Image (tube, rainbow, N blue to C red):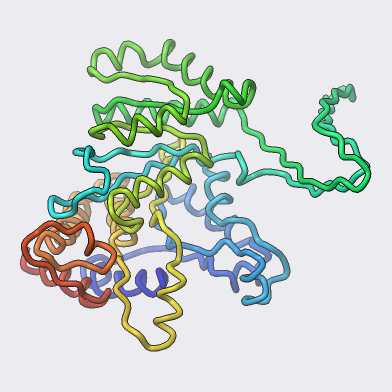
Length: 386
C-alpha cells in the first residue's frame, strides 16, 4: 500500500513542482529475488555516493511471504542492509498537531528516539541445537591462537536455540557522537538507556563509550548549551518516559530503538505520524516512513475498496529528503518548497480533514474522515492556496 501512496504523492505533490533528477532502485521482493538482493547493495552504494535518499516502506519476508512471492530464500531486512552499509543512527520524531491529543496525557513536547542502526539481532547468527551437544563461542586470533567460551550444554533429546550478536567500538562511537551532536543542535537533553546490569560486556561497552566521549569531547559544549546527558537502565527509562513531559532525545540500541519508536509513535496516535531519518557519520541521510507496508489496506485496495491510509510519514520522508538535497546543493527555493508542503499537510489536519487512524485522538470541534486520495487532494489544495 505504501508503494501506491508513494506514487500518488509524487504525481500530485512533487512532480508538478520539482524537476526530480533521481536514481531509482526497486526494493520490492520480486526484484530482490531476481537480483539475489544485489539491488539492495546497489541502493546503499548510491545513497552514499549521492548524499541523500528517500525510501519507501519495504517487506522483510517471513515464511508466508516466501510462499506468496515464490522466493528462493528468506531475504534479510533491506533496512538492515542499508543501515549496516551506511553505519548510521536513525532519528525518529512524532509529527504533532494541536488538534491531536497524545494517549500519554503528560506529554507536552515530542520525544525523539535515536536508534543505533547497526548490529544486534539484525546482523545476528542463529542456530538450532539438538542434543547431546555442547555449544561454545570460538574466537580465533590472526596468529592462530584460540579462545573458547562455554555457552550451554544440551542433553540427549534436549533441543534449543542459540543466537550470537555483535557490534564494533567504532560503530558505537559513531552512534554516540551522532546523539551528542543532535542534542546540541536541538538544545534538548539526551538520555541513553541499556541493561548493563545484566549484559555486563555487550551493553556495558555501550555505556562506557558514551561516558568516555561525553567526558572527552562534549561535557563543556553541553554545559555551555544548557543541556544534560544521562545514562539509565532501559526499564527505568520506560517508566520515566511515560511520566515525563517529553522534549528530550532517547538513545537506544538497535532492537530497543526499533520497539520503542513504535511505542512512541502509537502513544502519540499513529505509526504514520512520525519522521525517520538515518544519519551516517559522513553526513549522508536516508529518509523513510517509520512504519510497514500496511498489508491489510493493500488487500482491501486490491478488492477495489477505498482506504483511509495515512500518508504523512511517506510525505515527510519526501520533504525531509528534498530539504537535505536543498542543503547539500544550496537551493533555498527547494527548502522553502519542502517546508511549505509540510505546513500544508499540518494545516489540513488542523482543519479537521484526517485519515481514520487519527479519529480517536482528534480534539477539534469538527472533523471529517476521508480516504487517502481525498486527504492528499486536500493537502494539494491548501498548498496551492498558500
